Length: 343
Image 1 (tube, rainbow, N blue to C red):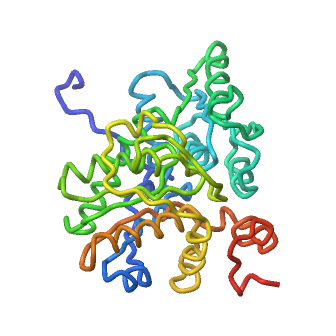
Image 2: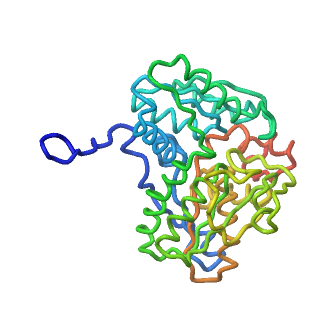
Image 3: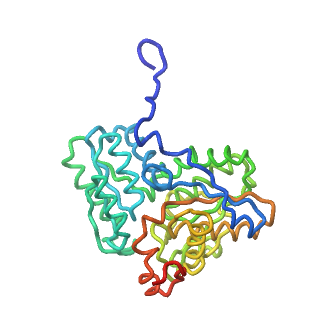
């Protein structure tokens, strides 16, 4: 409390920061009609950085500010598939920080271009598994440690996978918004896992309101969490073109989260749903959203008609235009190609 005895008031958010969160909850007509449930998508592409990752980006940076590890002009380093890097760059620009992003070179050109437009310093590295010391996360950690020795205004490694400020962002904001937007009538929530922050935060946050809310995992092929939550063993098979989701370990964000249902979603099932969302409902979304909505349909069918199910519309499909809406790319992967894309 200040010396004059008045309470300190947090400054009102301005610029991009004022636009993070409070995203619309959109009823998905076709998925609802198919299942007899009310299926909703949280439109996280409406955040200023264009994805659900703006929320943890803001919370991670504000935690570092509260800890005193960052001051204006400081540097934020992160290893990311792209969306968290974009979210960090958005928040950093609004708050006067710099960003250094380490990203696998296999990610979409659209995300690479966006990071450069945002002014982030970008380090593209070969894709490598987490067990490899040259995995993008390990490179980012080492770079942050090295740069901390010379940066006068502080350097942080955002560490989105194991920094629980990630899931706390969803406990504090996304879960509360979903509870309010459904008037407390939400029966189930489901999404895929990248870091685990969204799924774990929503599980913890929603079950604080009502422990009977069912939490589901929608896992792409190539990830190991479907196996973990159904057999107790981390085991993966197959591959997916989805970016930013698919995990092979239990991150700190996932620790302690309750997952009641787990489903494995192949690209052959997810992509037609993503294309249908565009053609039937005008929603241009990425492949990870296709995985999420496919999972919501499975959860709704398992729970039965009359329930309210919520999932995440992670980001825009325009962020993956060179892959998701490229018929040559899809045919080369032997993936479904909608008729309106065929040449």
